[in-house]
Length: 56
Image 1 (tube, rainbow, N blue to C red):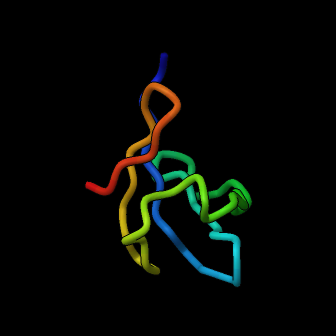
Image 2: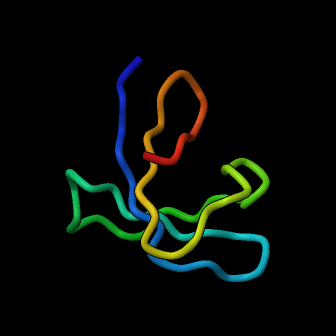
């Protein structure tokens, strides 16, 4: 499974908007905050690997 890296661009209620770091020209990816670590905040970098997000 591929490892992907994201930056939390914006938090809006129960959703976070992520930008893929290696494809900055793509649109933001919206995901439910329940699937992310509780400690997330705007500007935080995440690693997605093995169906899990981790703060890096």
